[in-house]
Image 1 (cartoon, one colour):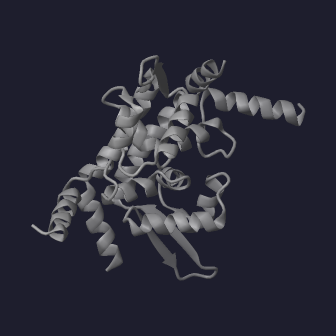
Image 2 (image 1 turned 90 degrees about the horizontal axis):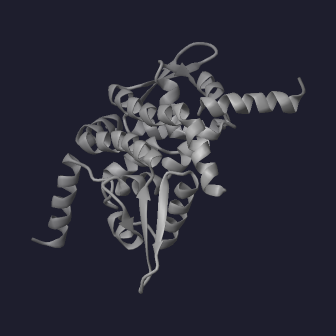
Image 3 (image 1 turned 120 degrees about the vertical axis):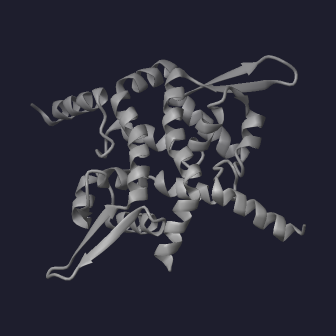
Length: 131
Length: 131
């Protein structure tokens, strides 16, 4: 087996069941987009339902127009988000979660919700460590 | 109520139940550390049990010594990870998850495991979009 074929076989195996610990597994890029600084918050903000760009921007404290547009584009490229432009005056664009995106967002909420619910314990633990 | 007192009251409320959508809520920093490029992978790599620095570095494909040390320090500061230095020759250092860290890592596995299990569907969805 040549090296190229071995690499193809490895990639093929990884495509069926990913392994985020492997440097070259495509699962790692998906994970990084979903857990990026703004990616996490965009997914959470879309969980209740589709929103317009301006509403998303208001919902996510501190995000710039540029970073929001970039994040939405990346998640759209991964098939997590859909984008619908309406031919109205003034024009407006909706974003929503695809079925895959809804599943992913549920898992993200599992982590973010846990942090929100346990914030007081987490901050105490961090403070004790620092003392 | 002065502005400073209002801000304190807001911070106090946020400390009891966080809100990652708020720019200044401390939950957002915790979320960002846990979902950082290497933070996610360090938490997952420690889920089966404590590991030495060198073992962690081997487990996490592509991480540099410097980034691993920095990530461990950040998560230790948040009370997610403990560090134990052994007074032996040659010296070695173990890292493990605290009880809070174990809970957080379980949630991270919820997301990463879902991506690994559904990688083939995710890649097909992304490809269809590009076509």
